[in-house]
Amino acid sequence: MANTAHIPTSNSALIAMIADEDTVVGFLLAGVGNVDLRRKTNYLIVDSKTTDKQIEDAFKEFTTRTDIAIVLISQYVANMIRFLVDSYNKPIPAILEIPSKNHPYDPAHDSILSRVKHLFNADSVASTRH
Image (cartoon, rainbow, N blue to C red; front, top):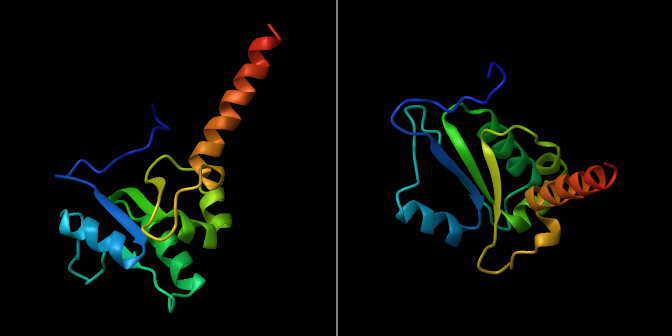
């Protein structure tokens, strides 16, 4: 149990978002938004002016903050920084790719789904060897 992930035990952990404006606003209206004392938010709105570097920086920030348990990222945005998303291997915060209004979900590009498929393929290979 020494190597298990630790979720902050204060009142709650946050959900971070990296997505288009419509998606982020929807989650903000549902009460997911947060601004801390340093005026840092738990979301990044991605539009045509947002650079890949800004997305990378937000992803790195959200995945290293101890108060965030889940990072929701639109799949088309995740594709822009696919190398970072695919190389991320910590359980907390969990990275979940979600569809957006203008970009449908494609299971072939989902990093979690591909890891699960790989795990089941490895298990099925191991079980046939016994």
